[in-house]
Length: 498
Image 1 (cartoon, one colour):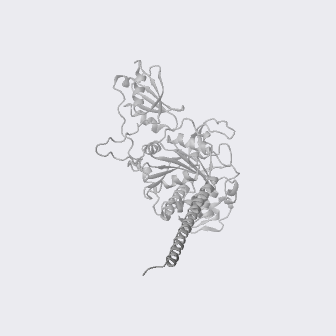
Image 2 (cartoon, helix red, strand yellow):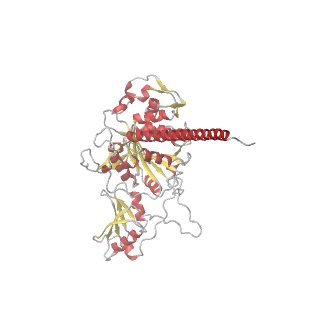
Image 3 (cartoon, rainbow, N blue to C red):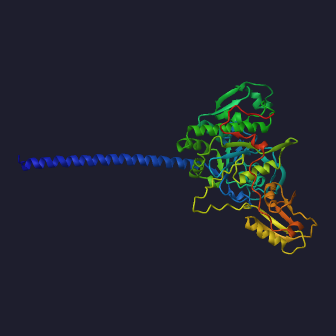
């Protein structure tokens, strides 16, 4: 059948309308999709901008100039809890006055394999050496010996505290470089626990108002019932601050409950899903009351660091306390246990002695990745204590080849000793031991002066060059490892001391 010209024109117009309709529908779908994308990107950008605007960074000018060398794989993060009463903290029971104090601090070492981590709690009453610290007006303080650890944060008496001074103190105490520092105040802590929907905790028995505030003068109402329960906000804050009425009422006992709390918090976040959907609300709550080092001073950096921890296993997340003993009503560091702990972390070993540096084994036909010199980051002065010329230069050359930094080579009056003497200042014993392993039979001696020095004896002059170092310690002392808590331990276990 032959179609008329009129019919053909009518069919052509119908086809054109269909094509225009389809193009219009496609444009509409494209516009909707584009709008959704813009809303999503704009929403994310808005949230990141909001987080960025909430993050406070402390001034890096206050960091020491002679810091330990950077690690080869693992990272060290110093976490400080501030009890300042400034701002929103005043209604949450902060300390006296607005000046911040640090009654809680731990150094988190994330191993190079990003599957293991250990948090070392530092008791607030620990007697330490505080190096020079920068004041708000730019002046630097004189170094202090035998001071309480938490007093470093109070240098300058500002509401924000002095995170740089505490970081300098931790680096001097441990010989480890602190890669990041995070300060969380009462308001930030309270908001974080609410953001995750509460944290599971446990109490060995009922706790009353008088236990939280022993100056109350009466037992008061019950604020915690015995056993497991979920806490958030003010209740969570009361739990981690609780000291009296449980065990011996010491700060050491409170540290055990704080470790249990952080373990439970980490488990809660892991159970909810370690992804941006979980972390963003938590970050939004935390950043409003958080102070960080410049390296974490943006939402992108903060969330990127948090995401890097997603593969750390709960059982392989350990909590220990710096080896300690009572010295009067203060706490002294126990050597050599503490030195062995720092040495293990420096070599990226777990507390049970496993290499967790994350270094991949070499594949056939390839050279293994070079191992960082074991003397990296250790400075030493070399002194010739004999009548043999050039001895200090000879030893210095060998030490440099193994990664040590030789700060001086001198000749001193002959000591008359056959053995080589390695001297070290406070907090440098583990590093001095690393030096001493290059000189068989060397003696170790602590001095009041800072730094590490080697005075070569006649035995070294008569013998060969320094022997290769013995392997790094494979594990921390059992008395430290056996008291470690894992993040997956029973929430009701090991909650007090004494």
